[in-house]
Image (cartoon, one colour):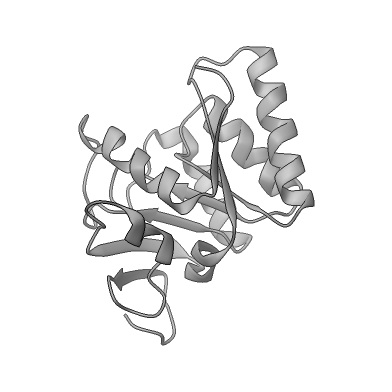
Length: 164
């Protein structure tokens, strides 16, 4: 899609001016990033906040605190958008009016789990981005979730594992 205007869904190819430069550090950078929301969010300094899906109250608190601190320093928050620690960090980021980036293990137009839909929609509405390296329409597959973790890490200057 180059450097022009972006619609509801967009694609950024490797080599284009909007391609996230941090992904070039990967041994095998993805050729295309599929996304929704604001692609310029991918250029911001970011902190990945991740952890278990079965978080404890401590895990929720530490995710919330880490996200608040990141936002207070103008740092975007990246996660997988899953239930548990990922969603606690994303909710806190959005509550603080920070930039939230969700990297899905499905197509950027397929929300999984379905209960993450409000989080995805709020991320887009508040100027964040929801991205994937999987083609449009790709349904959940086990192999795709670990594959997306390298994208979460590469987009971020640091990875904070809240609870595992």
